[in-house]
Length: 444
Ligand SMILES: *[C@@H]1O[C@H](CO)[C@@H](O)[C@H](O)[C@H]1NC(C)=O
Ligand SMILES: *[C@@H]1O[C@H](CO)[C@@H](O)[C@H](O)[C@H]1NC(C)=O
Ligand SMILES: *[C@@H]1O[C@H](CO)[C@@H](O)[C@H](O)[C@H]1NC(C)=O
Ligand SMILES: *[C@@H]1O[C@H](CO)[C@@H](O)[C@H](O)[C@H]1NC(C)=O
Ligand SMILES: *[C@@H]1O[C@H](CO)[C@@H](O)[C@H](O)[C@H]1NC(C)=O
Ligand SMILES: *[C@@H]1O[C@H](CO)[C@@H](O)[C@H](O)[C@H]1NC(C)=O
Ligand SMILES: *[C@@H]1O[C@H](CO)[C@@H](O)[C@H](O)[C@H]1NC(C)=O
Ligand SMILES: *[C@@H]1O[C@H](CO)[C@@H](O)[C@H](O)[C@H]1NC(C)=O
Image (cartoon, rainbow, N blue to C red; front, side, top):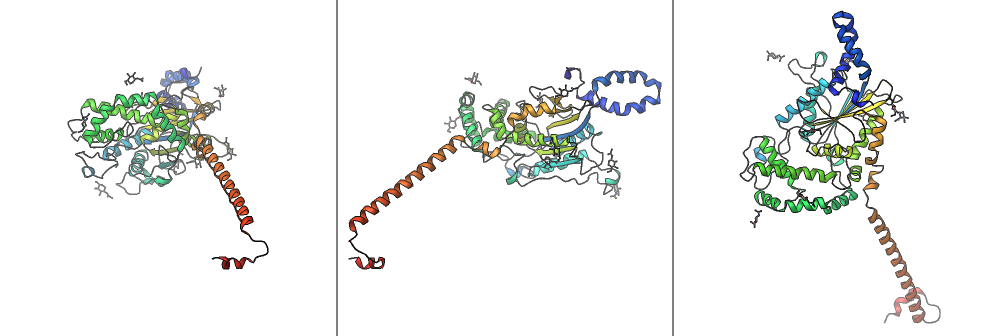
């Protein structure tokens, strides 16, 4: 009943802006009358909804490859800052994203940086930290009071992180989860996976031969694609064996390996152990944002992370489009307070610069999804006790069984020893009292 009648994202923001400015304009001149009429017609449709909170998750910008393959003509020294580093292109992409966010949220975020309004967290990688900084340079160009050097159009803004070894929120797949490893083993047995392996056996062998890597599998081939992709993006001529056809095939296999991480088999349970962990935190912060009894000034939560983070989250939400998240692509959650008091969540994906973000619809909900329904629909992928769910049910029973067996064995052994001792003593002990200390003298 609601969603089809509502204007799309662009119109919505325009109508929001129009509504804010409408009163003042209207008083100015009767020339604007038709305008006002149109507005009056649009108002009941648009509602006076207020944006309350935004959560963003983006991938870092363009980077150098994370590694080279053995026969790669471009080793680490071919890259200005070595492997895995944000390039200037990557900085531009993030700055552009920051600018796009400024345009989108200009009426929402204060033009000047306010530390209570926004919180930024990044994984502890140079490229994600630098991406966040480049992004914020685009989002908060200093003006007036905030300029600290006349010719510097930049101001420092904190980007928070935790050491990589402690990162349990933004880096996937999460390790130390036996049940997840077990699910991955099961996935390797599925018809789809086995078929994919068989179908590509020869291709993978060819890739192994050409790259000098011993064993190339469906799960490792993505890194070869990634390296070649980076080299191509930086206009480095590729070896002759890397034809367009080979690149297409590699890309397809790389997409499969991303799917493999969080889907193909038991997506929901995998999500509980992976992307659901991040989604759980996002849900908590959405809920906190509208809690009137715990007022918060926070308006935006920004996460700077990786393509795997985006897949993990989007797989958990079941909105993944099957394509690796492009550089600087950004998943958006917007929390609105509707005029009837209801609260709703909308999701968008900005994966093509120069285009309005794509609306993402949570399966089972409208684009404008009530928070209550959003929470209800995502509940199955939220872990209740991650550590416990990561344990392998069978192995717990096995361990109990083994421990039980060992205890029984020990008791039995002790009983036998006791019995033998008693028998032995009964036989060997001569009648009468003997002092313990005399035993030594009895030796022959
Ligand atoms: C934006 O921040 C400035 C400086 O902190 C403050 O004076 C101003 O009132 C804020 N504007 C809005 C719309 O909150
Ligand atoms: C700012 O830049 C202009 C032009 O590049 C230069 O003439 C001026 O000296 C600079 N001012 C300061 C304070 O650096
Ligand atoms: C195996 O993969 C091929 C090509 O991807 C497809 O045509 C075929 O139907 C698949 N077979 C099974 C059993 O999935
Ligand atoms: C890979 O190399 C091995 C040994 O050099 C050769 O036997 C095999 O045919 C090659 N495979 C492909 C697909 O090129
Ligand atoms: C997000 O929510 C958590 C509780 O779930 C809270 O501790 C944290 O401060 C919130 N983050 C921000 C930036 O408000
Ligand atoms: C809202 O905040 C109050 C105070 O912090 C807390 O007791 C209550 O549980 C919160 N409600 C929700 C729905 O999170
Ligand atoms: C961007 O996301 C939309 C929605 O998932 C999808 O239809 C589109 O193909 C994506 N574009 C790219 C370049 O990945
Ligand atoms: C507000 O939300 C409730 C629960 O989702 C729903 O029943 C009700 O129809 C909503 N109100 C409006 C005006 O959409």
